[in-house]
Image (tube, rainbow, N blue to C red; front, side, top):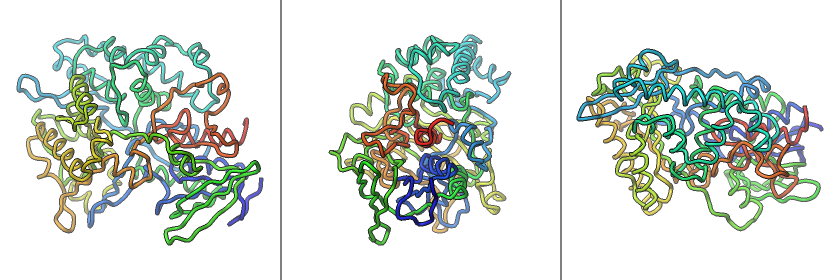
Length: 524
């Protein structure tokens, strides 16, 4: 393979400069391929970017995705990514109100006496904590066994099962409703809800269904790097994709932004890529192969295929900057409570009620959501003046608000969803959240919300679905797929690299881009 700056033909053109596209570009360029990355936005990074959202407020917010778990150390090491991922001091805190008394369930990152005492206070005995430890102990074993397979060719399901120490849990997650698997270990409504939320992040699913949708989402949230630990990228999510972009550029890949691909023209010997820049100028380039980091629905459109049903995202994302952390009615230290994932209205029964209302076409009366403060773990996202003033970030992620609920009145529905989650959070605070928000230069509160429709408009992500579609089990789906990388498309000269286009895509993992590159480069 040869590398040539501004070539008329490249060995590979990567469509989409998100994290998967950048990972694929870096691997291919390091192998000596000539590579061009074409990205529609003003910067590469896709959903994993950091931005100054509020005028006059020097805070870099992770605008869309906000934590890292599935990015394998293997990719970090292979590409020499200069990246620091920090552990949060607390795993989670769940705000509760029982018999009119405010409280909370604390789960430490390293579960100890405080966690045990918190379970005991909530449930009245030590049995629930024992069930929790048993369940997550089993999940830890599964994660240790499963994570290394994510960077190898696909195995058949039965072959993988034979290599697992807890094949029974693997079977249950794949064949039984997630709610039943959780209920085998946990009995308290609040505690079961804390576990179930990992099956619903970015996924509109019925946890009582045996369709595997919630189970697949749950699995991906628990297996990252063999630990399932969700870590904070120092410098924000933009630091992750900035490191990937540096790796690609340093290996010789060209990165072109503000270039919107309009069509792909595959032939037996290559693919012509047509795009327009932000001034409307048309351009085209030939590639030996195309690596598509865009969603499968986008790839269909680029190939002129009839439009498939677009996926539907289900999340509400709210970015905030606070002048101070709010006090809690439970009396818990807000520095502890907000350092991890702070759950609100995510008990198992509340998740069910919200799902039923959303499925019926209604915005849930109580939207299950979680919030977390990035700046408690990584104060570098705050400017010097903001840090000195005690500012903090707050990220809110709401569940069970599918895109369809916003279509009739996008702005009004988003505003109503924000009103509800703020009121729900206020129910656990000693002071209104509004009193704690910082203000921009115009005196406006530092709160920005995005529905799935907003995500779709900003990122060309169909339906605003953060995974580009339903997640897949990380195994071969057919006998023919065994031993492959799960990136094939209908055209041999086009390989997928996106979350939804690859078997093991999903979240900020780079696994889609890694698999695309490995499929093209062959065995090591």
